[in-house]
Image (tube, rainbow over the protein chains, first blue to last red):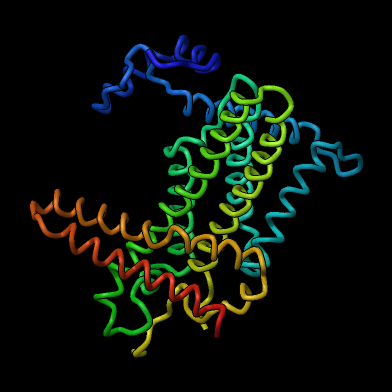
Length: 243
Length: 83
C-alpha cells in the first residue's frame, strides 16, 4: 500500500471500488488495486473543489454596488490576465481570458498546496504539469483551427512551399517539444522547491525552513506566471492575423 | 498561389512582443530546455511510428529531426530579438 495523505485516504475509502471498476473497463491495471487514487489526483481534486467553491462564493455574492474582498481579488486576477493577453495577442483576446485565468489559478493553487501541512504539491509530480501542458497545447491548436480553419495547417509548412515536406515534421516535433518544455520547467522547479524545503527542515527544523517556504511561494508565483505567459504566446502564434 | 507561406513564429506580430520584457524572459527561459525537449519529442514520435509501422529506423530519423527542430527553434528565438 502506498503512503497516503488523509484526503487521499478519504477518497480511496469512498471511491476505490468505482474507480477500480472504471480502470478495469479501460483495461488499465492500477498499481495498488486497494487504493487506485494516487495522492497527485487527490490533490488535484482538492484544488478543483476549492476553486469551484471560490467561484460559487464569488457568483453568489456578486455585486456591482458593493463588491466584497473576494470579488475584488478575482476581478484583479481576471483583469491582470486579460491585460496581459491583450498586450500579447491583441484586441480579440477577450475570448481566451477565461481559459488562461482558470489554467493559471489551477496551477497556482497546485503549486501553493505544498506549503499547507498534510498536503503536497501535485505539480511536483510530472503527470500533473504534463496534463496542464497538454490542455494548453490542445486549446491553442483548437483556437488556431477555429480562427483560420483548415488554413491553420499552413502554419506548419514553413516559410516556403518547397521546404514544406521538410518543415512539416520539424514543426510538429517543435510543437510537441513545447509540451515537454512546459512540463519539465514547472515540474523541476516545484520538485526542487519541495526538496530544498524538506532538506533544510530535516537539518534545522525551527525557523530556517521559513526562508525556503518564502522562496517556494515566490517560485510558485513565478512558474505560474511563466506557464500562463508561454501559453498566451503560443496562442498568439496560433490565432495571429496574417499580414 | 503565393510562393511563400505564413509562419506562426515568423515576422508577423513580433514587434508587439519585442518590447515586453516578461515575454522575452519567458521565451529565453524556454531556450534552456528546448534542445533536449525537441530531441526527446522527435525520439518519442519516431519510436511511436516504429511501433505502428513495424520499422526499426524511424526513431533515428525522429532524433535527427528533433535536433534540427531544436536548433530551428533556438535560432528563431534569438533572431526574433536581434533583427
